[in-house]
Length: 149
Image 1 (cartoon, helix red, strand yellow):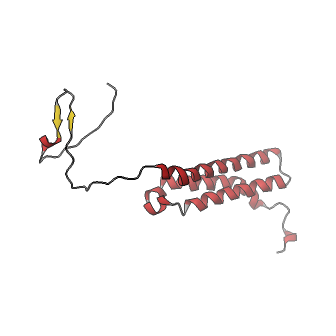
Image 2 (tube, one colour):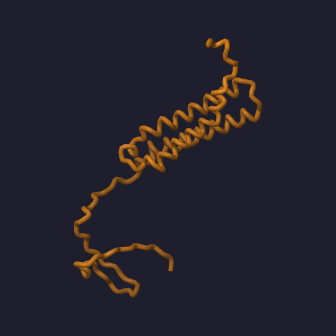
Image 3 (tube, helix red, strand yellow):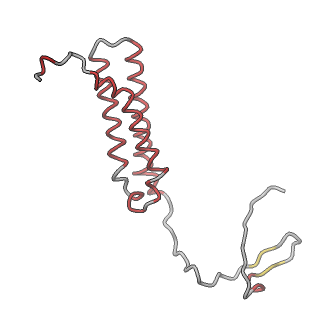
């Protein structure tokens, strides 16, 4: 099959108009919903970043095809909105990955699960001081609730 037998406007790039934003959105959302649970994929999204960028490229190709061909005003508007949506999602995703995620504080020295808790003293609901050392040998659950009462 040679290039002369193909129609002037191929159908595949027109599908890129709606496939591109969907791929971009799926790539970004899947990072937060699934891939962020795994430390190796959370630190640098080796799977999600190419998918998000592929969706953006597909949106650009679809938009280019719509403006290049004899598409109507509605098709051009839809392609432009899809491209802007892909640009926005890809931009926010890259902003989070390369800037915001590095602004998070580092995890301080995490105590061992079986280590002794530091001594604390708090006031109970009656205004009496309660120390953690008063409950040695028993299991204690501390609930810090910032309520409005």
